[in-house]
Every structure is written in structure tokens, then in C-alpha cells.
Length: 77
Length: 476
Image 1: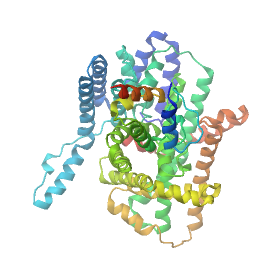
Image 2 (image 1 turned 30 degrees about the vertical axis):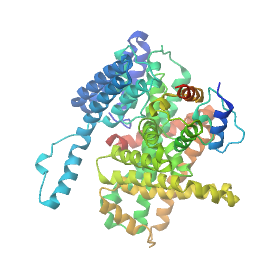
Image 3 (image 1 turned 90 degrees about the vertical axis):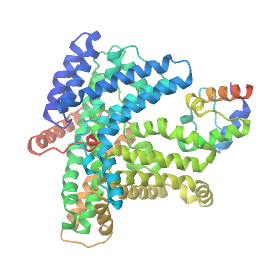
Image 4 (image 1 turned 120 degrees about the vertical axis):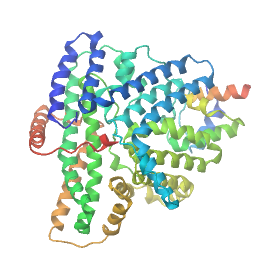
């Protein structure tokens, strides 16, 4: 289950006040999260949690839930 | 075997009923055999190439999946890439590379003309190599497990509706469909016929008719007045779109007759309000391929450069996109132009958002039409490089199309352009309104049958009486 902090980092980067995102949500379902903005969202997550993710692991993620799990596993390292 | 030919119509009349008559467990072998026959009809010499790519990609996929360590997965992916892209590179780009290097070295008094090899571009090579590569990429990124069936995989690579010019399908969309039992469906049949009919309408009645005028003018541009050169530019925008969209609809319709669903390749691209939106609506299968397997990995690799990382990834992607279309610097430049337009948009994004916040009218509907018009102008100008045989030819057009000198034929020219644009607009509007390319199915039966009857009567008349132009994208 994605945390409120994780959710708010994404929404803030995309200038969205009120949009429902959950584990199953995919990038193309979120307004403004297109391929050009993808870089900005990933950077915002890495800066907020002070981590660096591998490109390979990011690409493997199929939805926001998997991206969140990736961030959590990096934080635990 | 071209889609816009009697032999293809005859081919379908035989193949489709046979497909449903033979037992289900033999259908994929039948379809595979038919696909190779389809390809061999055009060029039997290069069947071996399809086989090489099929075998190496199938084996590489299994090796990637079975490897435990990431470095060995990556190694097998690289091997598959090298084999596929080397084959593509040699046949498509060897002479281009030699010519370009020779031109460079001639400045120093050297010449490489003796290195030239007589090479023929195998039909569909740009498409089936890219389609095969989706298999290994998706296994590497763990979004697909390899198929156990070599027959099904071979069919995925060589599936005849998409073999010569796409859409470039994904293994994870197509292979599962081959693994399911197919039953004849009246709905699939109706949709298939409708898509083929609309595809033929676009290709034969709009694309080829515009194409004959365009070819005539581009052959000897210096014989024509500025208004006629402008007509050629505007009609080329329609030709390339209707030609390729028509092809894609025929491919999708053919697959639908066999119970297979192929992705949409066009989504009314000239309704785009920006170049970025255009690439979400034009040749969608290629732009998605480039986005997923080239742009996003590059973008993530260079993300520390922030917006400049995006610019670098966009530039590389579009230069290669241009090169994919053809072994010529005019194609590369066309790709460069699109990369430039996209990069500019990324660079000034923050400033654009500030301007939009300040001026409300920029969100209005009339301004959206202005954006569509401006985007279309940029697209038409860049298509000149796509169509021209050389930079000199392209520059000749640019020098002359902005000069207005009317002739006694000016009104007729405006009428010709208007009619073709109106017809294309109506089709695209209906596709958008009904959210489907087979919008004809939404009309009542009498209207639909009457339209199909007249449509096919005219198409058959054209097939009988005129020399058909080849599909533009079958040359890539």
C-alpha cells in the first residue's frame, strides 16, 4: 500500500491537487505523467527519499505499487 | 504481394475460409506456411533472413529468461540486438555508410566507391526485426515469459498481415492470441471487411490519387509554378497519411478476419495540437517501440541532467527514428527536425506554463484550432525533407512555395486540395467521434452496404485501369 508521502511527491510534481492513485495505478492513467514528464517524477521521488534507483529496476515496474516497493527496498538497504 | 492488388484479394478469398475449415491444432502451422508463401511471392531470396532472425531471437529469449544473473541476461540481449541490427544495418545502411564516408574522405583525396556492394533491401526488414526484438526486450525487462512453441513464435515474427509494413506488434499482445483457439465470428468478419474497405478507400482513392500528382511535380519541380509546388507539398501530407493509415487498416482488417486483434497505428494525427501529441497519434506502433526500448532507457540514464537529459534522449531517439525510415541524410534531417521541435518544447516548458497562466484565452477552443493549424504547418514543412530526393530538391521547394503567383489553374488547384482535405477530414472526424476506425458499423445496414458497394466498385475500377503505386512504407 503506497504511503501518503509517496503519493504526495507524485501529485506535487504533476501539479495535481486531488487525484486518486493507488498500487494498481499505471503512469498513463495519471494526468500529465507522460514519457516526457516521467524523468521529472522519478527525480522527484529520488530527491524526496534521498535514494538512487537503477534504470533497469525502474523500467521493470508495471505500476505505482511496484515503484513504491522498489523505493522501500532501496530504503531498507 | 501488395495489399492493393487483385492477387491479394484472391489470396484472402482462399486463405480465410481454409483457415477456419482446417482443425484448430493445425491452424498456426497453416498460417505460418501461408505467411512464408506470402513473403516468398514478393521475394523468395530473403526467407532465410526471416528464419535466421526467428531462430536467434527465440533462442536468445530462452537464454535471457533462464539466466539467473542480470549481467548474463544483458549479454544475451546484446547478442540478439547485434545479430538483428547487424542484418538490418548491412542490408539497409552499408552503402549509405560507404557513400557518406567516401564523401568525407574525398576532401582528403580518398575514394571508397570500390567498396560498394550491390544490395537489395529485403521487404519488411525494418519491421520484422523490430517486431522480433520486442520479444527479447520484454523478457529482459521481465514483462513476458518466453513461449515454449517455436511455431507460435515464428508466426509472431512472420505473421503476413503485419510482415511488410507493420503495425509493429508486441510479443505479449500477439503470441497469447495465437495460443488461443479461434472460432469464426460474424462480428470479426464484419469488422475485418469494414477495415479493409476503409483502408483501400484511403490508399487507392486518396493516397494514390494525391501520389500521382505529387510524383509528377517532384519529378521535375523546376517545370512547375509556386502554387503547384505548394499543392505537391500539401498533397504529400495527405498521401503519406492515407497511404500508411490505409495500409494499417488493411493489415488490421485482414488479421480481424482471422480472429486476431492488431493494434491501432493511427489516431487522427493531423488533429494534433503539438508535435509531442503528433507522435502519440502517428505510427503509434513505432513511436511506442522507440519510447519503451530507446527513449525511456536513455532518459533514465541521463536523468541527472534534468531537462537536458530529456533533450539528449529526444535528440538521439529522433535521429535514429529518421535513419530507421531510410538510408539518406534527408530522412535523418527530418528526424532531427522533429527532435528539435520536441526538445524546444521541453526547454521552454516552464516559460510556456507561465504564459498560459497569465493569458486565459490560450486555453480556449479557438486557440486549440490555431495550435492544430500551426502544428500541421510544421509537419508539412518537415515532410518536404521526407519526400525530397536530396537537400537541393527540398531547398528548391522552400524557396518557391511561399511566393504567390496565381494562374488560370489556381482555382482548380485550390478545389483539388480542398476536396482531398475535406474527405480525409470527414473520415478522421468520424473515426474520432465513434472512437473506432470501423465507424461504418455504427451506420444502418442499408447505408453501409450502399457505401461498400460503391467503394469497391470504384476501387476495382482503379485496380483494373490504373497502375498502382506501391505503399510508401513498404520501401522502409
